[in-house]
Image 1 (cartoon, rainbow, N blue to C red):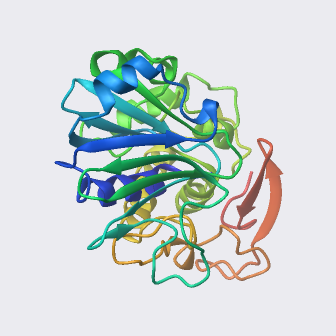
Image 2 (tube, rainbow, N blue to C red):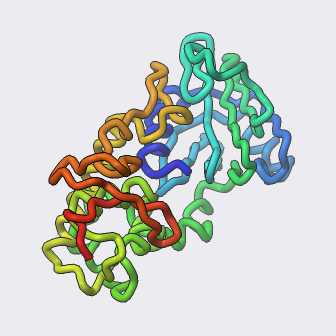
Image 3 (cartoon, rainbow, N blue to C red):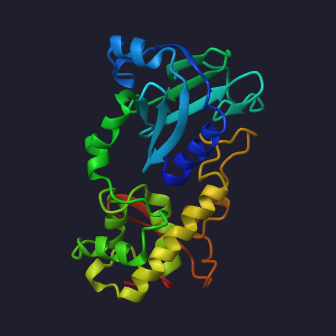
Length: 289
């Protein structure tokens, strides 16, 4: 499942390509992927120009000049692929001989623009969706009402982070990090990486973690998220930029998917265990209970 850096990589790429383009047509093959009333599509989507692309947590929002927005949740396997005669973004890049032509059997929605370019919404598992909503109603979606603050926001301080964690004092720290109502966008990879960075065992209860370590966790989390965004995310297949470069964060990961290898800090063999229902990677020496 894409996490915050992967979705931010998509936002950055599409922000350089979509604004100003005018939508000519839309087609879809799966109603749940595009659950929109035909009358609203005709009035507020067709003919609209893209005014911007933004992100909230793991959700993308394409704003239109009709004061409507396309809200896109990629869920587990969703991908956005842009193609034109001069620019490309996303999986299925023409330079990638391993991926076939689009549309393919996973393509759920196609937006066609007046200049001939297209935006493909691919989703093998069919859990993702693209909803057309009045821009003023976007923040009223249940998801946005419940989701926590952005961990990289300039006004999200260490004190804010600690206060939100302390609301679940009796829970294990990894389970709390994965809770999207506490902080937005953190998934399994970056929970493991940041806990290793702060030398915190993922099963330790929040109430048993000193404030100094929670501050270290705040810094570690922001650091790994920033690095991952710089490297284009953590997957080498689903998220590539307009130059066709693939996300390379996993080559910089310290513990995630490194079980059996030495810890880069102390040399102890990294192990994999199950915490909060997820495969979890730790250094048993650096991260003691």
